[in-house]
Image (cartoon, rainbow, N blue to C red; front, top):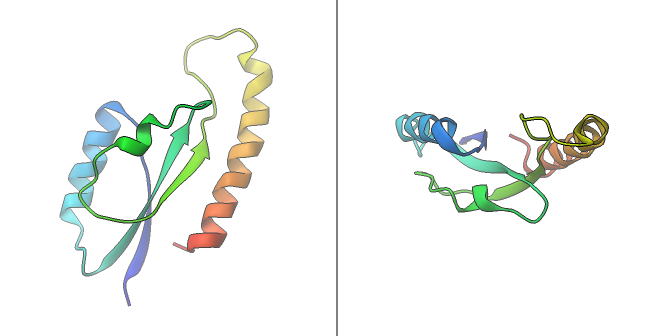
Length: 95
């Protein structure tokens, strides 16, 4: 039986490093699924190339790293939503 691996995708250098790690993991030993951040209606991380096939799950983006007006009030709300998204993914896919 294959072990399940849930991979969190993001853009930039983080994505490149994740792809290099995934290329070293055996497709015979692991089954992969991908969670990607969603910002509003932007699903750009869903188009990232990955070396192994698997289901894709959206998860709410917690917030920007740069100062944005009202961000301090929105971040706790986004965190709660993201936790519900993550729990839903874990219950559905069971990595």
